[in-house]
Amino acid sequence: MSSSANTGPAPMTGGLLAITAIALALGTFMQVLDSTIANVSIPTIAGDLGVSTSQGTWVITSFAVANGISVPLTGWLMGRYGVVKTFTAAVVLFTVASFLCGIAWDINSLIFFRVLQGAVSGPMIPGSQALLMMIFPPNKRGTALAIWSMTTLVAPICGPIFGGWISDNMTWPWIFFINIPVGAFCAFFCWRGMSSRETPTFQRPIDRTGFALLIVWVGALQVMLDTGKDVDWFNSPAIVVETIIASVGFIAWVIWELNDKNPMVDLSFFKTRNFAFGTIVLCVAYAIFFGANLLMPLWLQTNMGYIATWAGLVAAPSGVIAVILTPFAARMLNRYDARILGTASLFLFALSFYMRSLFTTDASFLVLMVPMLIMGAAMSFFFIAFISIGLSGIPGDRIPAASGLSNFARIITGSFAASLVTTLWERSESEHQTRLAEVMGGPAGLSGPMTDALHQASQFGLTTAQGMGVIARQISSQAFLLATVDLFRISSIVILLLVPFVWLCRKTLVTGPVTHAAD
Image 1 (cartoon, rainbow, N blue to C red):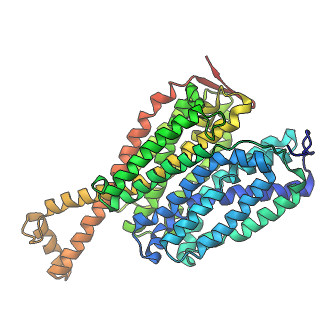
Image 2 (cartoon, rainbow, N blue to C red):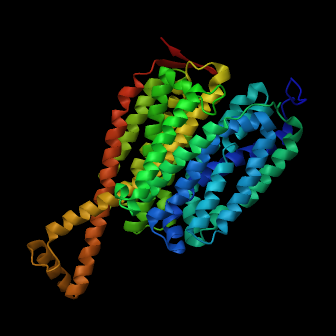
Image 3 (tube, rainbow, N blue to C red):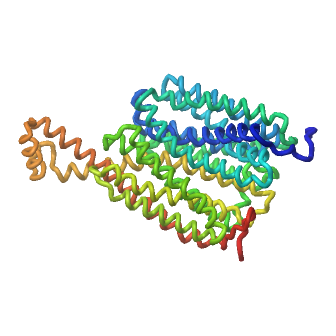
């Protein structure tokens, strides 16, 4: 046991409080930013490194999976070494990993460094939240939570905009290099202001077997999802082996965690009805949201002629609306059942996806942006409602563990969704392109539609070969459009199917800092 005092240090005041709070907020901002900044840069990174766009999505999924796996370790690290040391070390290592990502020489090295970056970033978000609560006076902790919440909402807005602007005006490594001065500032002022305020530490056993099994099944499943489309899925022996490893590893992990005395991930929370159904809805809806956020800029840049900056600006309004409405959503949560707000958020998500399923290839910037505004309104209610539902009825001393499990499940499902959405998109595009080609006629161009199209092309001075090229590009563009709107339509339906699960939860009322489930 460390010699830490039983009573914590006095809260900070004045300029020291301000500079430390800014440094902690920047730590959260930097980590969340890096989960979205690469979204609009994937086509640029893939082209520069000579790989396909689908392979480029590994830059996103590798970070998310590594981050998700590292989250369950956070509690043990903070208890063993202290919150201040753990958070500061995570920021320093994250900054170093960002530099390594920026100097990556090929796709394999970039993915490796993104895994490293995600792995060391696990303690950054929970650490910043805990330290903000510690340095503010009790009567100002609402301000601390507001600072923390706003940074988690602002960062996803800035990610696509920064990533797009940097990709268009500089070079893609700078989306990682910008972390270096921010990380240095954050680490320096956090350690300077809080090194004497370290939290108590204690010896605690670590669930090595559970952690190893977690790495095995999550890693095998992610590799299977990312590489399956390139090797014809289950016709490949490697995919079959990875599926078996993931399945056996998952079952073994569940059995071990349910029976171990000190589990890394306490699955017993799923015995609580609100946590089980609330987490299921949170994870599925977030996975769809995360996949859509990846799909939209890919489609805009590869088929709609948008540069990365404008693709990022299309997505930006959702974050702006979320920031504006979240304070009002928090007030409503104190007055209404969280299930009502959660249901409203799902309906708004479904409406946003349905509106996107009506897109055409000549959609204007405004038409593309309006559904994102509606999604921003959904975001403002979604997270606070389902976090409140999931944590209702959980004893206060177990809330950090329950929150950690919920975050782990959410991050992992989001990374799986990022892999699946590109696979489904490309497969659907291939099927639509085949059907459109059949309708237009064979390469001989003897069918009515093909003859008419070639005749129109010839009136613009194009040769038959040039006309065929133009028609082929149009078919491809329409096929990608149909694939995109198909996924948005399916997303809308799945979101609506989640609504009954919300009402399987008990009534959730939030009264001050206490959330409880009414019988």
